[in-house]
Length: 337
Ligand SMILES: NC(=O)c1ccc[n+]([C@@H]2O[C@H](COP(=O)([O-])OP(=O)(O)OC[C@H]3O[C@@H](n4cnc5c(N)ncnc54)[C@H](O)[C@@H]3O)[C@@H](O)[C@H]2O)c1
Image 1 (cartoon, protein in one colour):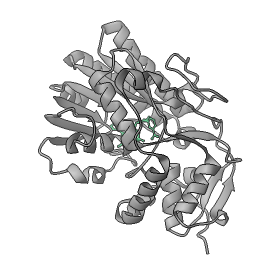
Image 2: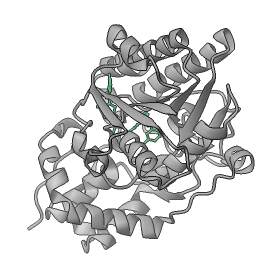
Image 3: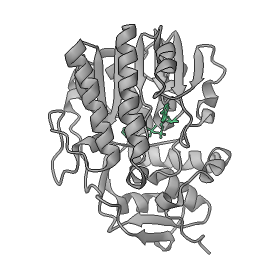
């Protein structure tokens, strides 16, 4: 089986590629894996170092918004797993244009090429953020979309396009929508690696608003196991939720990260809340559990401890990336004295 992974040099896409090639997830026996990635600020070929010498891996540096290139790359693949996206909510609030281009137009270009080449299966990777915010209970896959941020709106647009290609052309499209991921190789603008690397550097961490926003935290490997199950056995035209980590307020997450890094609350700087900040996300994962046997394996205490240890041991990976941070979205504070 020849698998094309867009965004395969990013946080989750690279975990998927490492998992496929090292056989640490469900067995999909990839004969060849192609990564198509533009290497934006969050794309990093070093994320593929552990599998760089695998003869089954080919990396193409390019843009999913380039129809001629996409047409050439898609040819000959049996499956596309589409991760490539602009992925950071705060950046979408600062400037929505790249999100519309990559997330909406880029997805349409990928879908068109898959349709033309008769690609066997298109796995579209999405997010719980397309549903908006929920005060209590959990969303099922039938929940109407009500995205709030420009990021979530463009992901919702891409989800609807992907489902439309199934309905209109009979394409074999499956969708996954996942909760918040954490783990190694995550670009250090997202909360877990931002906080951990700031704390390891003796700095402070910015906490939005009252810190009461709730997210479900799932280890990136559990996410990728869920995607592999959907790639392998998900029903065409269906959406599958992937979650089932641990729900925490941002204050609770911060407390765990401070403890893991041996730091106190005096290292936390309150900052003005994110505009339009969704209060809570929560996915019902009954469908993927019952249909595909998905059960997350990595509990949060173990996962966070391993993640903090990874960032502690891999300064050479993240130190150069801190220079790519946009101060407008990471609220750098003073170094702790
Ligand atoms: N991080 C999360 O918690 C989370 C949760 C649910 C769903 N998702 C979804 O998972 C996917 C991957 O997210 P991530 O956290 O790994 O993001 P990321 O920002 O780490 O990686 C995105 C990758 O896409 C590449 N890319 C961006 N624009 C491109 C373009 N025009 N052409 C080709 N490549 C391009 C980047 O270079 C990067 O390697 C996204 O679709 C995101 O919406 C993420």
